[in-house]
Each structure stands twice: as structure tokens, then as C-alpha cells.
Length: 282
Image: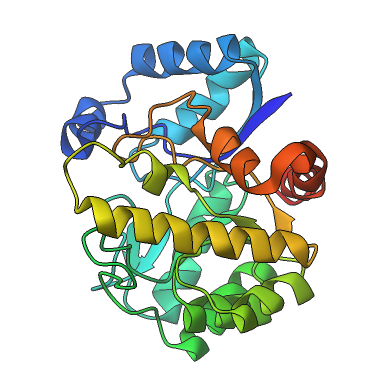
């Protein structure tokens, strides 16, 4: 059984602006059906969407049973105003706004809550993020409110301090998790956080000529080292490609390949607890 713990049905892996425009006048059901069929044909039976504010993931969840796929979505991701994520999610100015968005997502049938709490990797500069993470106290409050509402929480999070704050607040899964030190890895392990390192978003950039190749290799090596260290300490790793991100097509198998390169012949057994935890929580 194949699964992908982090996709974006709204995106296409080529041009994010054009992909979003495809659905602005109404969800393109044909696109969703073709994409679900591709996943089915590749043997996928579980997909977890990272969310969008146009209802694409919601429609995909509705159609997925026709393709033998269990589909989970947070509906719209939530991000603090002025920070990364507004291009795909809904923003909040204060905790009252945030609580209202969670209630809206619940009423619309969200399976979990997705929060955006850091920037992206700068693929031209190893060790650099496009913006710092939210303040630890804000991260804790965002997770606390969502948990109190009965939701599991998926967090887009990069950087040691951001991931540590999220882990210590009991976040259910961390997505990406670039540039972590051992303390952050230990925090995820101690609090049973599921980590989807989305290596495909880095590995698939190699040879494309869009970013500095040396920087891409160094970023990937940093991620490889952390995945191996987390695995060695018994952490919960799960497969998530971030399908729809640039150079990461839907139905991609590169995440399995990259993880198997790191984890070796025992990859399937090492990944199994994370896969089970992901599908139990989400």
C-alpha cells in the first residue's frame, strides 16, 4: 500500500500561479479526477492534503472514494497575517480571528487543522529561510486552541526553534523540518511527533538549473543527516512528497526512493510506525 502524507491537489508541480488560476472560477473537477486516477494507478490508497482556500482538496475528498482512496484535508491552511502562507490559506490578525477560522473549518468538515508557522527554505542559500518562524508563545497558542477544538494539527515548520516550540506544544505532525539540530529532533521524538521531511522538494531540484546546484546538494545532505539521526533514535517518519510543489508531480515515487537511500533495506519497517500513526491521527 502506498500513501502520500503531504500533497496539494490545487497545485501541479509546474506553475503555482497557473495551477491556482485553474480553479479560481470554480473547482476543475476534471483535473481532480485525472490526478486521483494517477494516484490510483500508482497504487496509492491514502492521501493527506496540505489544504487550499478554493475548495479543491474538499472536492478531491468527495471524489476520492470512487478511486479507492482515503483522502484527508484541513480545508484551508491557517497563517498569521503578514507571514508565509497567505497565497494558499486564510489569514488571521488575532486569536479571535483564528478561533473563528477553526470554527469555520469545523463547520465545513475539516479533518484536521494545518498551520503555517515558518518561512520556506531559500534553495540558493543553505541554512537560510525566507522568514523566521512565529514566536514560540504564538506557536503554542495556535496548537492549544486547535487541540481544544478537537483537531489534530499539521504544521508547516522549518528551523530549530520553530520545530522545538511546536513539538513541545504537542503538534501532531511537522512538515518539511529543515535545519534542525539534535535538540529539535529529540523534542519531536519525545513528544511522538510525526515528521514528513518532504525530501522530494529538495531532491527533485537537482539538475534543473533553477537554483544554485551546490546549495541544493548541501540542503539535501543536511536533510539526509537529520532523517538518519531521527530514524536512529526511533522517531516517527512518514512519507510526504509535497506533491504540487515545483518539480514534484502528483503520484511521484521519489520520496520513497530518497528515504530508502537513507534508511537502507529496512526502510519499509522503519517507516511503518510513522505511516500507522499518520493514518490514526489524521
